[in-house]
Each structure stands twice: as structure tokens, then as C-alpha cells.
Length: 75
Image 1 (cartoon, rainbow, N blue to C red):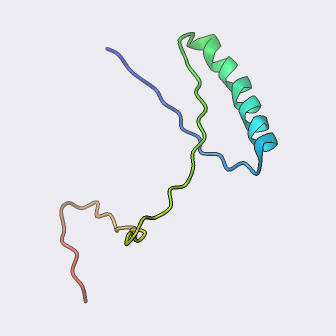
Image 2 (image 1 turned 90 degrees about the vertical axis):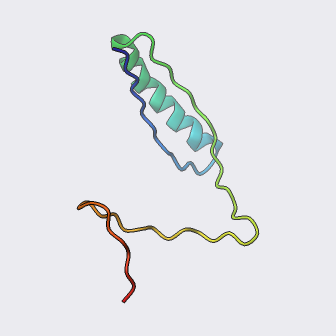
């Protein structure tokens, strides 16, 4: 059996110095992970918020029903 574990951390950094400090802290944590799992990899990526295009509007969060499939009814 093959498994993959993935940890995602979204970080808001004020500037490049702050971003570098976060990266250093995570690299220290990663060293401990790699002692146990030698094949573990760490990847940093800059993420930018995508502006809404044209007539797009931000989607409103939908309620989740845990009791099964239900229809949304307006009152």
C-alpha cells in the first residue's frame, strides 16, 4: 500500500523579510520530519490572490447538509 501525506500552510507575510523568517522556521521543522521520513520534500511557492474578472462575483458560501441530499427552499 502506498500513502501520501500532505501538509498545507497558507502564510500571510508582510514583506520578503517576514516571508524568509517563516521559511526558515518551516525548514527547521522539516528537518525533524526528514529524520523520520527521509524521502520527505518541502516546496515553497508564492501565491497571489486572483482578481475577479469581468462579471464574476464572489460565491456565497453554501450551507452543508449532513443528513443527506436535500433541496434548498426559499421562504
